[in-house]
Length: 281
Image (cartoon, rainbow, N blue to C red; front, side):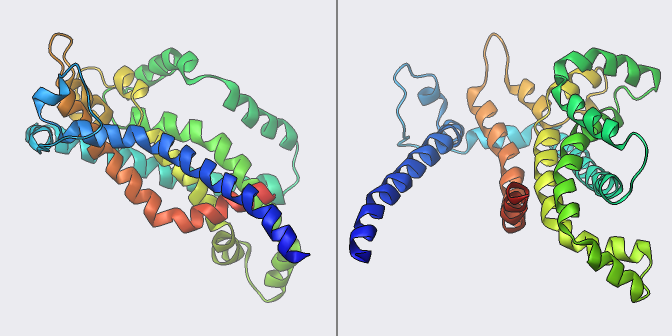
């Protein structure tokens, strides 16, 4: 009987695995095409008969990217912006999620509803008001004009996601810690933080990607001082309306993708457990 059930289950499992492979191939193909475009010589890129391979790969496109004198500065600026957004949003979201979960206060439900409403407002609709706000605060042409909006936009999602992790920690554990003489701050940083760390990693990934790939704010708030531009702005150096350098665009995009992949590799275990915990909650 068990053999019959196994035989019945195997076709469905095989179909699921094949489907997963097809989906993975579709998702990975744009990345493959991007790297291929970065390795192709100029003649193949401009060819009217593109092929999914190249017989003569070259690093000329990458050489042009790294010879661009501002590229290293753009890279460092992107790291500063993304790193600041990840650290600040994770810290604030952790404290906020703990507050709305563990404490009872007036307008707590209203505050949570406001978090949801903030997620519904499109970023494009707020760009112009944010521009005037940054101008009034004197933050235009600074990295602060990129860091602050991204922190604000990443917080609602992070707080909502972390609420489930904080709620999953039993209150009896907190009471036991207090009975053992632990202060509230000690419980918060020594006990609660390690338990919700997978959730923090999951929210940090989304914050990092959003800040790292941002083009709208970088184009809107960095107007004249290009020394504070980020990597997405570096693509404009290689894109010219009359004669775009598609090899340079693809090579710069590939270089931009590498830190994201490295970040994913470093946090993949905690990311999977964090998303699993969020789904379970």
